[in-house]
Length: 205
Image 1 (cartoon, rainbow, N blue to C red):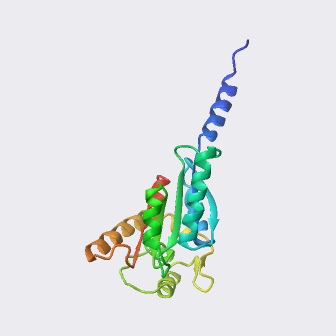
Image 2: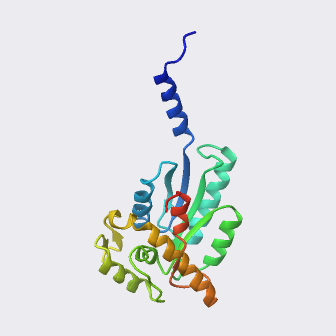
Image 3: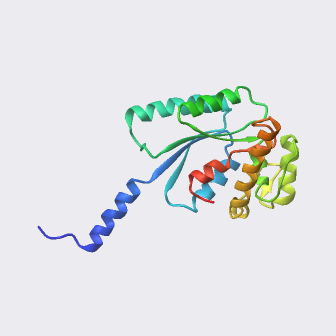
């Protein structure tokens, strides 16, 4: 039997590497801005594939779907590896049962990235410090005044090019927001975000 050529060996190695690529299975409240942002962010790495399984639903529904999905793939082991992760992304806002959703998700090994009052506060952290407890409309107005790629009327990013390179600043400010809320005794209070955890999962900084 003839030996495989170096070219054939490289091709097999490349195919094996693609087969082992990890996946983030995401259940996301936002159907536009968050998906655009994290898909753009994912282009800066090669280790994970992002799969938005479900979008546009409230946190409790997202958790129920994620839990059913996790049970199904754990049973079938189809399209899922031990290095894959399941994520929930949602706004704290005025939703019911958010603390319960977070605790239940973590107990089942499901990761959570929430923002209070909305995901736009995390986008705002890319550009400036922000520590005011304001409603989502004020947060979106502030973001629109700074980020030319965000449209407050449509409540969406038209592109994420302007923000992705500022991710290190956003991560630092997100972490500081959590420390501030903890010091105030208002964990999960506004403004705060844990969206940086998903960026860190992608091993970006």
